[in-house]
Image 1 (cartoon, rainbow, N blue to C red):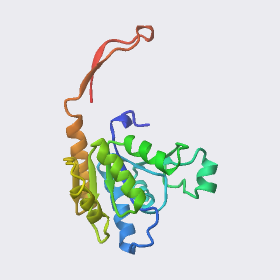
Image 2: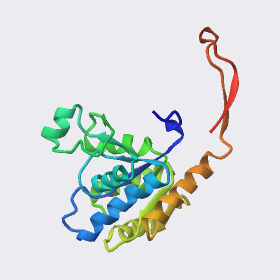
Image 3: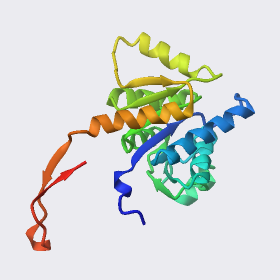
Image 4: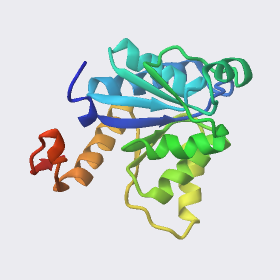
Length: 207
């Protein structure tokens, strides 16, 4: 196991679980998002669902990346039988038990950055949570309407968020997300002290 796993940047991929309104080329775009996360040494995190996030997870796994899913279900059985969601293309599935709305909150807050592809109301929900949290939030432009819808929401929200950005390609999207996460972490040094009973020593850890 990679001992530096905790240092990898976790990127949430948000997008529609139903890609029926999209074209066949958009499946490849979804895969490319996941591949870029793996290529740029990140961890892909999704809502353990179908559609755009699933195809992104497939892309990440094809590149040898790590994939984590946050399920709305309480158990694997409920995940598969009740929610009818997949468990493929994920190295780890965390069963939140909070339904879709609660899952979205845990999902986005467990990541360093969120990137958004084509989506519906669930995607807008994940966007709104991430927007409020002020974490790096990337929106992928495409032949869908989601990027324009989200821009319109921001323009009329009367709330400025400098951590939101738009990108035209998956490569640019992930590169900018990682750049912003690293900028946020830069200089975040903190001191920790282990319990002497365990032989720990006081020291400084740099993120």
